[in-house]
Image (cartoon, rainbow, N blue to C red):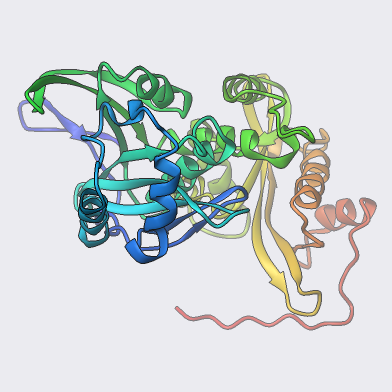
Length: 388
């Protein structure tokens, strides 16, 4: 990305590489460990959601959303609107254990062409509030929005809504300000607080949320071992340490340069822009696992792991597609450390085998692999079919 200027030297904006818009939201089901997020159906979710929301007997949780439904007709009208609407596009938050809808939410103000989408209309019943599922549902919806290619994910709320004002930064949103006198709700002024999460911020925030949601972060009674803030501080500290760690978007300039060096090692021309775009896509989409080796703030090497499946084993395997160490840092232990870390990360994810391919004349790499227990395949022939 680079800043563009007009003929008078005025900055016009940073280029958005290959922008073609985001995918309009689909009625998909998102599966988590404690909950799932399903397209709202009045028949499937209505009774359970009403029962869960009516556990709020004094109605205090409706204050900032809408008047509380009072009759069967009110509930039916609201559920009918949710089922028929496409913007907002409503989903039910369903407890995995019981199968009951315990909350609802929506994507809204959907601008696929501009790459902007908002999360809102959050209705958390007492069964959902302050639970793991409450956070996991928001993580699932964030992840899906960025997978669809959105650049900006918004959260807006009444500036007087203290729980919502606390929840947004906890989930990784950045406070942008307050739109004063933004609306009139039921004859009352509403000042609206704006928060956002950008695609460039998502990989780091995703890592924080996944670290918190990991089953290992909870004891036998379901109590968290580390808060979200503690996970965020821990991961931030890791990015400052020497050794091997997961790559983040902040590594893009150095990592793209290393990746371009790797491609040149295998005979490709210097294509820095292509390398930059490719690595940026991997970091944003999270479809591969990239580990980097850092020393004194500089990235000296990386490895990229691509998910596959073995039909014979009926289990996941990973292809160690790239391993590269900068020329000046070779024979420093960086390659060995990356391979050791790759094996540890893969094993922790339930991967049963790592595969790799290397050039037949790359004797140095072959010696390293053999010294670490990798075995050369002498049973199967490897074939390729070029499609373009």
